[in-house]
Length: 290
Image (cartoon, rainbow, N blue to C red; front, side, top):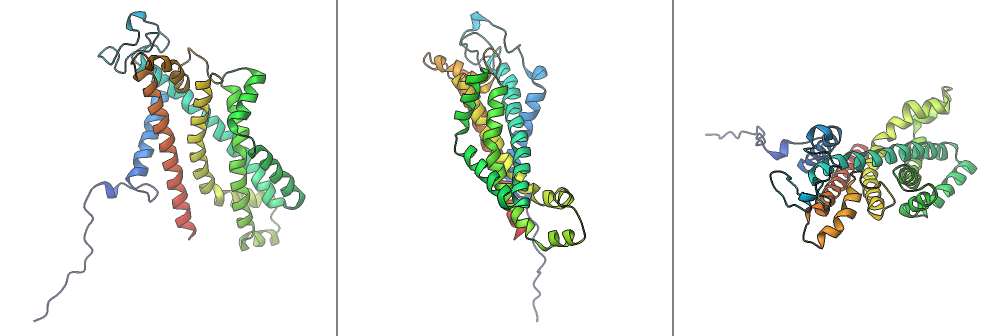
């Protein structure tokens, strides 16, 4: 008598293991969802906020969590939840501009250095090294000292400071792509370098650049919030997470935690989420290239 063994693969039980995006697990999915929520909050802040973020109510000064103020009120009686929702706008818009500008400049510089080589590569590489040697916050403070506080100067300064991060990466992977046989075949066929870069080289390096940009977004968010906290960025009474921490610092001494704790938690969650997304995309790219 023979015994047959069923070799049909067992079905995976439904659950978190099936939640996968770009080949990544539940943590990556959770980070994507969190970022989607933050973007939705920033876009629909006027509809979601229960109060005007700048409305003063001295009778509610440092009020605790209640039905009227879910996250309490700050030292001026402004609703913390409303300011938190509106603060997501500046908290995400500033880093978005930083990442967009630094990525564009980094791609232009990195591709030009890798493609042209020679003295062009030397000049551009040394220029990136020079910019890289200055801390981004120091560059931003120097810009603010000349132009005055606000969003424009810190954003421009941070975009310049972040360009070498993208430029170095793009130069490295563009040099690897340039050495591949398909580049030589297109050159032999008479294709121009510009056409090859736009139609083939850039699409091949785009996933890696996207991963770096996601990580840079989190760091830019943290740096801009730090500048606002120090008084060099967005100025009160405009709702901004970094400025809210500065304003809530005094409230901590009076036992009111939420005015400073709530924006701090938002910054931490956003930075961690962007880092997880960036690392997840990078892992996916590494697996693809194996």
